[in-house]
Image (cartoon, rainbow, N blue to C red; front, side, top):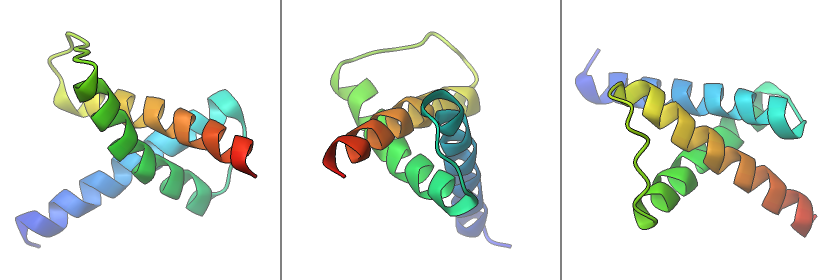
Length: 84
C-alpha cells in the first residue's frame, strides 16, 4: 500500500471519528452521515482554526486533527439544520 493511500485512509478515519463525536454532541447518526460531516468538518475546522490563529497546545497531531474536524463537523451539522 502506498503512502498516499495510507494518508487517505487516515483522513477518512479521522473524518469518521469526528463525525461520530459530532453526532454525539448535536445528534444525528448513520455511518455515511458521520463520514460526510466529519470529512467536510475537517476542512471547515482546519480552516477556521488556522484563520483565527487558534492553537490548542497539544503536541499529538492526530488528536489535534480530530478536535479540529469535530468542531468543524458540529458547525457543518448545525448550519445544515438551519438550511434544511
